Image (cartoon, rainbow, N blue to C red; front, side, top):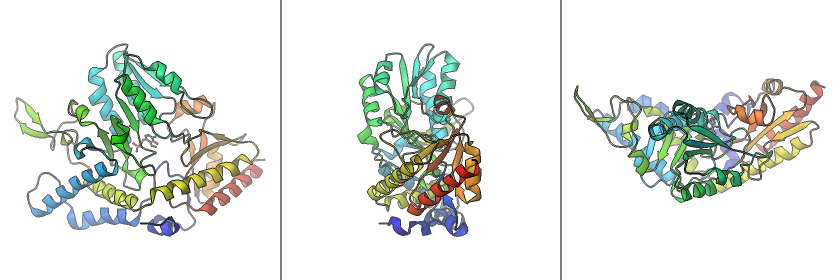
Length: 402
Ligand SMILES: Cc1ncc(COP(=O)(O)O)c(C=O)c1O
């Protein structure tokens, strides 16, 4: 088991930048040495393509690539590794479901439901599909705390609804949505539901079979893994009916000029040479997370979030954006008369990395009538004293801007 106490030393970026206070973990997480080494060793010692060569090195790489699929299935408690499709990330996973699952069956006046707090990655693809056929995108409303209105959601579930897509955790508000209840409600009406796990997968144990969710998406880079690799989980019953949207090598059984016969799921959706080193790196990231005490991590992150929130609330003119009862380690805020970009620039000069902007959730900013917020997002290597340092700098910003 890895103890949180000395965890920072596992992440080489903090040796290169000893003063860095990295509070932008919702954007991407830092990588432990073991992940960096796994990728580097792959290129140094094992680099081959997969599922093609029959020489020992290629066979071994293919086996390792498929072993990570099994590891991911176990990590998420999926029923079958074949339900794990490698993609380039959450965005690609959502697009695959939209184009391969929804679009072929979507008709004029059908409805697709998303929530008011979706990342653009889980909004625009559904919006475009609806626009293409004259279907309607419906939005589950939220209250001022950033909590979804489940009563309204229940009333939206008519026979017109063909699909629901909702984020597990909001990247701009930190709200943890009641996905268990929402999945139940969707299934009572026979509607398939996708959960965007981009912000939950790193810290919250995911039990796909327990949840009974139909599709689940995440990105490796938010789970201490590399960029450019992600996962689409889909129930086999759905994946088996879906058509590929990319065609080429690696996804066929037989090709003639007249016709092609495709491979089975999941290779069916993995045309071309995939991100092999990314898969190897993701496998190492999951090994790393499996060594963490998940309860300790969640307790620590909750403490960090509570501590920062209570200290920020003492700052005059500062407003926390997103105060759901169930929140993850994301704290967004706005300060009267100070633009978030000024806040982030000021903090940047002090080696504090935060994100300022709309966080790819422009409708959330519209809802709160703000151009942007400043967002702090914690991870396992943050330190309790970073909260005090951060709050001190926020008070200096307030003084500086009068
Ligand atoms: C909730 C959520 N969904 C989707 C995405 C998109 O992830 P990616 O850019 O890795 O595809 C993000 C990224 O910030 C996110 O936070």
